[in-house]
Image (cartoon, rainbow, N blue to C red; front, side, top):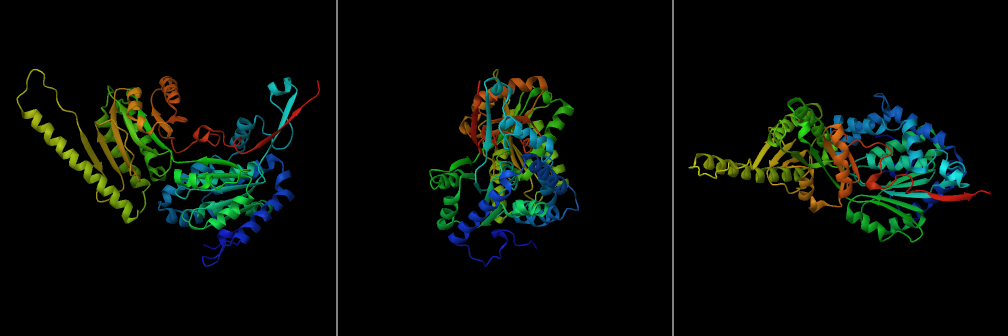
Length: 475
C-alpha cells in the first residue's frame, strides 16, 4: 500500500520509534493546531468532514478501495462486510448530523467559535464558550475501525491536535481516513499524528501521555486500567471498556411474516462486523406466546444467516477462532442429542395424569461445511457470552422482565439492546431497560448503526471532551 509518509505510522516496519521522536511529533501537531486549527470556523470543519464522508461513499474513491482491499484483509473481514460497515459510518458524516451532534452536546453549533447561550442561559444573562484540548491522545481498539474513525472526527470537531496510538492490528483504515483528510486540507493533516507499537514499550507511552491534555482509551477493561494508571494528573481521561449487547423479540413481532422480518434484522446485527463489537448481540431472548414459537424463530434466524452469508461472507478466521467455534458447537450438539433422546423416551413412556411433555432443550443449526454461522436454541435462560463470529444463542422467555433476571450476570455491562416489537410497546420496554441500566435501546437490525450523536455508554460524545468558559453578562 503506497501512501505518502505523512505520519509516523507510515514509516517502514524497520524504523525505530523513540520517546524523543514521539515527544517531537506531539509538539509539532500542537504547534500546527495553534497556527491554524484552533481558529478555524466550526462550520468549515463540518463541511470538510461531510465532504470527506461523501467521497468515501463513492466506489471509485482511492482511499475507500484501499480500505476494502487492505483493511478487510488485515481485520479478517470479507470486502462485502467491510463495505457495509464503512458505508454505515460515512453515511453519518453529513452537515445535518454533525451540526445535530454539536447542538445536542454543546447547546449551540457555534459554541466552539464564540460565546453564545441557550434561551434559558440568555434569560439569566449567561453565555459560554467550549474549548477542545490542545492535544488529544487516543488509544484505539484494533478489532473494528469505526471507533477509531469516530474518535478522529470528534477530535476535529473540538479543534484539537490529535495523536492516535493505533493497535498493531487494525490501523490501516484510520490511517486512510487521516490521509484523506490531509488530502483535502493539508493544514488539517499537519494537526494529526498516529503511530503503532507493540506492548511492552512503556517509555513510548510515557512520552506520549506526558504531552496529552486529554486521553481517550477504547478496548478491554485491562487496557483501560493499564492506561488509567499512567495518565498524568492534569490530563482528562475518557474511557470506554468492554460491553455486551443482546436482543429481545416480542410476541407481537412473531406473526408469520413479522417473525421472518425480525429474523432477517437480527441476522443483519449478528453479521455486521462479525459480532466483534460491543454492540453485537450475544443472545436473542424471544418472548413466548407468539404466533411463531421461540424455536421456530431460531430456525428462521438460521435461514436468514445462511442468506446473509451468501451475500456477505464472514471471512477467514484464525485456526484458534475456528477451533473455538467447532468446540462450542460440539458441546451443544451433544446436549441436543441427549435432549432429543430424553424427549423421545418421554413421549413413548406410559403417561400418568400429570404428564408434561419435555421442552425442546437444545437445538443447533450450523452452516454446512464451515464455521460461518451458528444458531443455538436453549431452554435455559441464563445469559451466555458468545464465541462471536456469527455464533448466537436464542432463548425463550415469558417476558422482558424474566429475560433481565436471566441476564443479571451482565448487569451494568450491557451497552445496547435491540428490540423487535410494535412501536407502541417500544416505549414500555425501553423504560424497563433504562431503569435496569441499559444505555441504548434501538430497533433490531440497527444495533450496529448508532447515530453520530449517540451517547456512548450513556455519556455525551463531545461534551466529555471539552472545557468551558462561562461569561456572565451585566444586568
